[in-house]
Structure formats: structure tokens, C-alpha cells
Image (tube, rainbow, N blue to C red; front, side, top):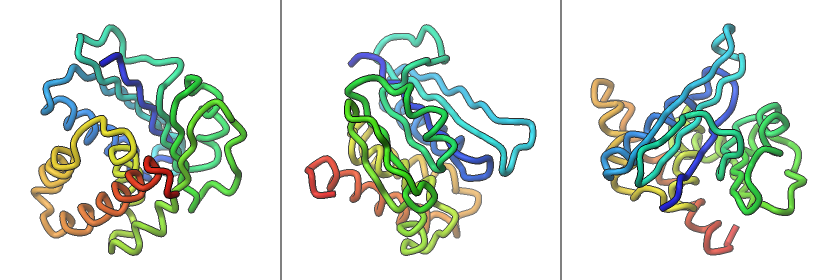
Amino acid sequence: MANTEVLMAGFGGQGMLLSGKLLAYAAMYDGKEVSWLPSYGPEMRGGTANVTVVISDKPVGSPYIIEPSALLVMNGPSLEKFGARVKKGGLIVINTSLVAVACERTDVTVVYVDAGGLAVKAGAARAANIVMLGVYVGYSGIVSHDLAAKMIEKEFAEKAKFIPANLAAFEAGYSAGVESRKGGA
């Protein structure tokens, strides 16, 4: 496995840093080398926030990435800021509940998902980030379904009442990712 470099971006408070952490931990539990580098503006909630996760079989030389192989965007400004940076042949996952424009790139795979709508259906309106994580895991297979679900359970262990809804949001995203990979979406 070569380095897999993932950039997750949105407004502060949308949970992309958490999604990146969950992905990083799942990869670590899978025996991979990992780096996790959060970045957020001083205004925090409502400001910009992004996280890079690098996953590799070899030690990661730098957590800083210029051209990610995958981009998960929660909002329009994030697509505008980072969309052009994705490597040719890479993947962009776009949350259509907040991004009204289509990605103009033709040299990458683009997966559109109504993360907000799927989160509401799953009973966790604030879990669109977990839906996005599910889409990426389902589409890429970078970590196993079960390992990612286990990380969600561990993350919310002290707030157990949130586990079922977050797992449902992950399942909804995962199914959408698998379906997109098969060409169904």
C-alpha cells in the first residue's frame, strides 16, 4: 500500500476532525502507520476546519499533504478551497445537503451524498460527518467496516446513548459508498 492521504474539510463544529480521528484510529488498530493533523481557524465553531489523515504501511514522513488522494467536503467553501488540490485519479466526496454546485473536475471520481439527509433518517441529525466517514470507508475499503464501527463505539463509550444513532449514520454512509463504488449512485 502506498500512502493514502485524506483531507476532510468543513465548518468548525461539523465534526470533520472527529471523523479524521476515527479513521486514523481504525487504521492504527489495523496495524497501519498513521498521522492525523487538524487545522482550524481561531473562530472555531462556524470557522474553517480541516484534518489530514495519512495512512501507510511504512512510517509516515510528514503529516502535511499538498495533494490528497481523497477529499471529503462538508460545505461549498471547502470544495472551492481544496477541490483543485486532489491528485488526478483521486476521489472527492461531496455533501450535497450543503454544497449546491457540482465539481467541475473530470480527472477524479466524484461521489455526491446527501449526508445531512441520511443523518436525519438515521436519527442523528448532527452526524453528517459520520455519514461522510461511512461513505469514504464503504467506497475505498481503506479500513474494514467492523473496525470503523468499533472506533465509533469506543469514541462514544462514555455517552452510550449516542452510539446507536451514530452507528446508523455510519451504516447509511457506508451503504452509499459501497453502492457508489459499484456504480449505482
